[in-house]
Length: 457
Image 1 (cartoon, one colour):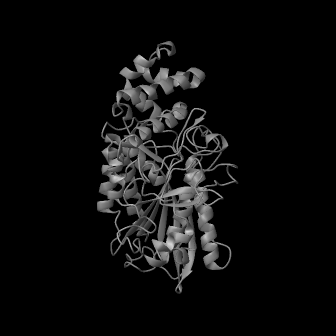
Image 2 (tube, helix red, strand yellow; image 1 turned 90 degrees about the horizontal axis):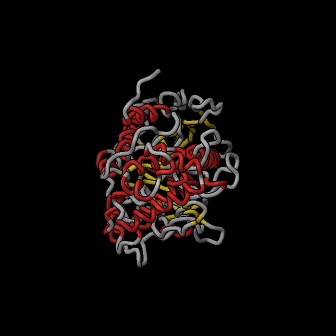
Image 3 (cartoon, one colour; image 1 turned 135 degrees about the vertical axis):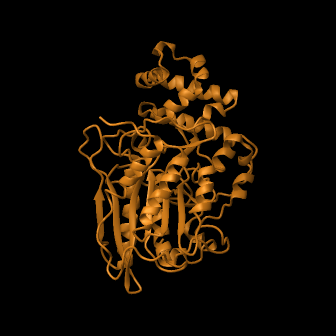
């Protein structure tokens, strides 16, 4: 028997798994740990945090936040039967797929820098719940020789979606503080999930709300598990689940769709309903929902407190642009702007490249584009912007370790390759040309002259 903990305490416990149970031991050669905080523009250890859905203690059971809160939810990844919200817990989680993509990228980058095979130390979390024999690797570390000393890159799994963005940010601050005690003061945050208002149905207008609820009922009519999930969430017989009931219990419906694993297929429709409503406004910042997403209070506070580069600490955030929407069997068009958190100020948004040099049909637009193929060894055929973002995160880690910089001309206040400002986001007209250009490697020197050469991109 165990007592139920609060959401904040539960998240803190989840986040601690990536540290207390999974930190590789030992001290790199020619280094001491903890090390003094490095000066800006100097070589230093880097920690890369994969903030994602690892389900390390099973699906979240606590309800989402209130009408003014935003929630992190599982990503809507396309390929191999979805590989996102509908991915079975006993198969593999979205976080593991993203983590493996980043791990492979760091293996390749460090191996190239060392002139041979990369050397890693890894650790795993305990077995997943429900009797699954699988273990999840939640930490890996590389040593990179530079200027006569070995510097560390540590990859850490951080279990987050299913909670408010305030929970996520508070947990990140705890993790970063713990890593700081082990000598890490430079961080790359990989954000391959989607942020929605925690109570979105109350924010939608009557027409948009009705259309979203009708899509729920249409899918539930064809899937007994979905109908049972809605029935259980509302505490009524399945025969009583209709449009009038859903419309009168919107907060209960939101809570169920955001947290109940049986209702994962409805999340695509929820994301669709929210971001279509944002897109239909004249400007992104003029939408009530859009403004709540863009001006996320938790992220703004994080940037003010620890998210900015100082003489002692540097943070780079990278976000998956998103894969448009799949609501049921229908593939909806992608968006010309990224989902939050890639939409947030200071987060570098990454879209998925196609072989012809453009972006994949499923991909939302971002600032830069990279290969979106997933880790074949874990899930053949998987693809999405969730796998493009970690490739950039690996390059950002190499750049940050070697330079200590998160700024580069001509946009001196932006992270490397992030050129879309908060003003650009708020003023972007959805009916005109948007600032997200999906830039490719050949034009990256325009934004950060030495990024490709230093990072190995």
